[in-house]
Length: 571
Image 1 (spheres, helix red, strand yellow):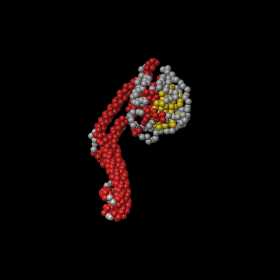
Image 2 (cartoon, helix red, strand yellow):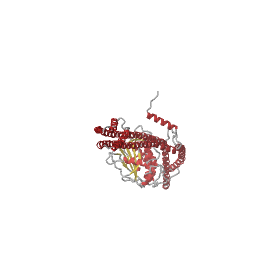
Image 3 (cartoon, rainbow, N blue to C red):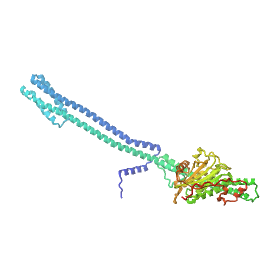
Image 4 (cartoon, rainbow, N blue to C red):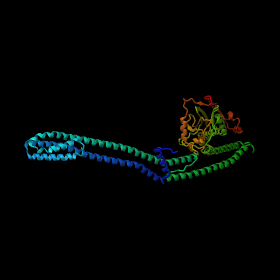
């Protein structure tokens, strides 16, 4: 069954068929052709407008000349009629033959002008009447003088008809002027319609050629964004357009294949590196553990101190390897598995992993201990807290403070990890969450940082549709705020929300500032507990290293229990 199409639809179909069949050989050819075709309707419009103006100008000039000539002729006829009457009356009084000659001359002139004027008024009754009166007036001198004098009254209707013919001439001129005015109005309306049609055609051509140029550019842009974000399109449609853009698309295909090869090489390198590093590292840590257990004999305090240093350095090295593997995993596996968990329990577990490092630094720890349930990915939250606490230990001051707070407001949970130490420079804030970026402040300890800890933490926060930002703290020098929105049970895979591998720290900072709690907002703060690490109840299950640290003569700083701000409630 045939489907009828509107003229616009047929035009679009025709343009689509032409665009599929014809392809420009170069971008320059397409641009030049676009300029020519877009300017063509405007050139036609200018030509037609010029022709119309020329025609109107010529018509107005001819009409003006005719009007002047016809008006002058009508006045001349009126003047001749008066002269004929005056000559006839003078002859009736003086009876001189010379006056008759003048009379005949004026009569001949009148007849000649009336013949010319008859073309203007072909159907005028005044002209027909004047013809009859002229014949009568031409025979008037042949009459006897007495009868001639009696017939002089014939000049009165003759003059009246001449004046009537002049008025008819003026009316005819007015009608002609009105016709010219209507003609000008019609030409103007026609020009407006042509202007609308041709300008619309130019706009359509301009939009069409713009689409021909922009469409492959947008396709290239999407491909470049896909390459940058690591999202490979399901079907790669070839670029259809100028040769330069087609060649650029082919270069992008080559670049995509090279990136895939490099990514595979990176994965293989990381797998080999992790295996090659973990194997000797495990041997080193196992050996240090055996020495600590006294397998090779009792250790002196100096030897035990060196052994503790080896064990701490091994833990730091293992943490760096795990951070690198976590970063690589986050770049490819963007899905999370949310579950309901107690944030306070996760904080305790992460703090337990850093007990020895905190003890060596002599840092005072303030953390919240009340139940605070939230839905999130447990491993991702542990990774975030682990990196933030490691960062605080590595860059915090010896004997300083570490504070972990939690705030819950409506559908958001905020966790702050703050520490005392050297503040982060303003120059580093914008790039703080970039992978492998290391700021001006150097890490304390035997190992140099990798610069990916905060990047991994920020990626984990983004997987939860949350944010990680550096914010101001009223008492401590460095404070990171983790903002987590409430997750539904059907959380989409994070790949769909991911736009780029590069982490935009400014967007996280802005989002964090936008949700920064005000003193007037009803926030629920979990209780804070501040106590010596060695006396924390959750360290009772720690291994014998705690007793070894106590025997080596190191004493942890003791603090009074911190205040409880508000009673915790489940979200």
